Length: 192
Length: 261
Figure 1 (cartoon, chains in turn red, cyan):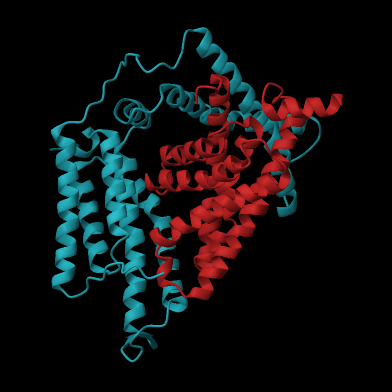
Figure 2: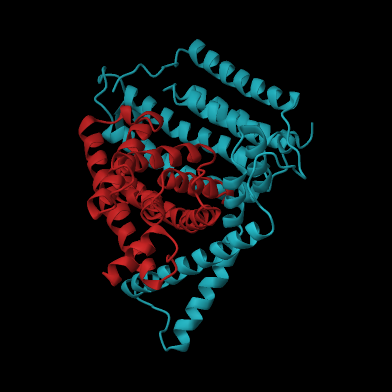
């Protein structure tokens, strides 16, 4: 954490706060889907809950960005009060670890679209393993569990990875990111 | 004794709740979680000052989720080992085994919810973060960064209003259709994030220019310590869990997680 500028930490937490609100806004939608389809309802839109890791890591490009942003977002959700409680911080950390592992595997050098999508898948995998034990998926039929897993992986790749990239690129175009890694890259691209 | 729960150390309270939730995940019977559910609510009744209307409102989504969990486990659950034993509700027949597992999972959701609400309803946010620095050695750089970011939360609403008005001045009106609303959110997202980033940057610069270094050897206005009360709370909760498991096993319901995948 020592090579982080304080500015980057505050920007990271501001992003986390914004997305904590977005995360909470999607909870009722998830609950509604669960009411109709059963536990798989959450998996269809699960990717939205990984999106801040992708955005923060893509913008700041430093070790820990994916993990930290997801953890802070979960913490803020708990702090706002309208959530699942302190356990949510643990699930946030576990989701963050999944994305972080993918970025770490590229040694924090590659931020192409497919890496971002893989990072979304990483979060999907770790969060599913955690959900399997904590959520009691063991009691469900095997076919249903496989369907849940597939839905979550696709959702992680598309909603977290792809949508996360689109939002970050949109932000970079406004120029507010000029002193962060993504903004610098965009500027260089224009010059070249 | 009164307001006992409000006076606990926030970090220890969080740790206790997490331990209990993990322990709850290890049992698969309906009796243990229901005993814990009732005793947690009872504890709130005795040891906390709660706005019960708000409490119920927060509980409602969990009820819905728990119901969804119940019927899907009942229908999509694994084939029971003894399908001949059935239980009849209204005119429907369900295998007794599936029914009990479904009930156990649904009650587990509710008792986890009660534990979480115990934490949320009795803990001050800023105290929790300060206690994380002091007890769990969280880096002050991160903690104060988060607190600064958290301060933007109320401003977001104003920011949204400004963006909306800026659009209206240019003749873009509120959307009425669902598709229109969707593209409206897309238009709002980038400006909202951009302004949050700008504010964060300004705040960080201001904090640093006033001498914030984020070093660990700082002093605190509010000191948090772990006292006997906190250990007592942990012991009470563990004792409740043990009592619940004991009751369940003497009633012949107890079913532990047996490592099946």
